[in-house]
Length: 387
Image (tube, rainbow, N blue to C red; front, side, top):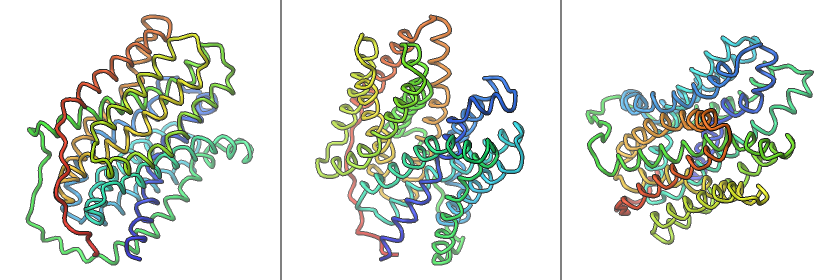
């Protein structure tokens, strides 16, 4: 029963890590027209949280050492929920930017600490990361797919459409209050862990996470514009983005289990990257775009849970897993935040998307190079922690 409760706590926490971003992304056109802001200002609403996810990730381990893992995760969920709720106050660009910053900081704390949570409560089952990644994908898909219908049904009430996702945070806080109350944290731990800045393997994980995140956020931002440039309708372009997101759910659920059974994470890493290569290659050919998007979604759906799994598999304790995850997410999300900007810059210079697609091909090939250089070993783990 305890394990089921911990799994649900993990699922509901991860469900809150993307709606703050994807609800705004899906409403970008309406936000620009209603608030009269430039495209650059509007882009900050999605870029700021991703940058925070990188820049503030190392703070998570410090807070965890001070307050305890469960309490710090509760604080992060509280911050995300408060930021989302504040969006209901007024239709103001200032409110949106402040909440993007505050919510991004909360997400940056939760990201690496949920890896610590898995290592602590499921030390012999790193494949549990599939629950984490699938829940994040579901949260992202719900917010991106339902925010516009909610906006329409609420008589174009923008603050309500963006703030209603706080209900997920309220549910999570109720669950995590119960979890925090169960944990008697003394605050007297004497250990101090630093980011593994000099560790070759940790650096490889960080580079891989960065290339993976650059591709993911670049594709998320540009799949629809690429489709429009190919002559597809706005409705079909939006459907392609939805398919890119939805195909990731079953893949993210299956890949960690396959790695657990096969013991060959490197093979899965390369296969998922090759799937992205095939998808990008198809975009350069005069063929329908849907198969390309499906290959890209399969690759992205497999790479993200693998990026979360690696620090858990290659470390021995929950604290160590947290520092490795914090480092990989610090560098990875910082790189990822600039992925869409880099692809857009290439488009501005060249005037067409073929050059941007070739640039993405180069990114994927660099990522495969990093993956092939990794030496991955499955560490011995302790028995399941029944705390």
